[in-house]
Length: 263
Ligand code: CIR
Image (tube, rainbow, N blue to C red; front, side):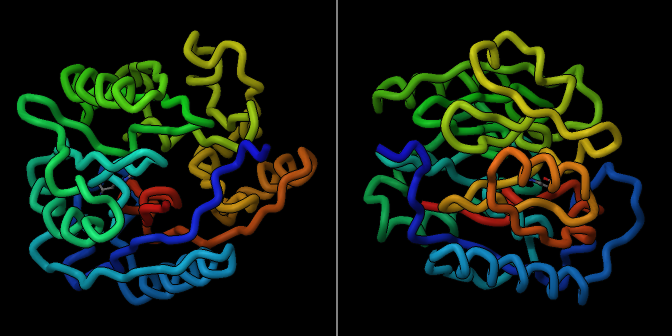
């Protein structure tokens, strides 16, 4: 039995004109909107090449960060849970995603994280039915507990990982990716966490921590371009790698995984 989920669909939301007004701590300067759109289109093509049918939600200029669509919902093989993003400016992104998912996940508009819980799904990393849940500046303990209970109710296991003292990680998946089977890619700050004990953990080579935000799609690891040692290490580990330039999204603290919802 394959341990790698087979995705057939994805939901994306191309960056709107307000993209450059989104939240960021990166200090990498303002993104080039035209280039961001080119990079997003290449990302969508990569998903399609992996066999996914991609739905594009229209941009909503009221929500500059809405292109980071993954934060608004957690999708699993047994149902979807809408989130309650930790940044108030992002809460309004969720409704449109819920409506778009309702066709595929019948409970998508009713099952959601409730106040005072907050959860960004960028803090949730699934590995074969086990879910690592980051407690972060965006996902609070209450949100993490609501998710853990929801997952348990759907027959999944989970473990919390507190990343609040780990600099450079906005979300858990900023530094952690599942590579299939028992393999994970994790930045050094996460690699030694007890929640990862028993997993085979690859680390990005020194200076390439940003490369840990990869996403495994139907046997291909979509990886950020510009981190050649990590790409080489992934290939040496027997993985198929597709490198994508994410420079303009990195300027807004985003990466590969957060640009789509996959199921
Ligand atoms: C934010 O701060 O919410 C956005 N500018 C970036 C979100 C990136 N999402 C993710 O890594 N899951």
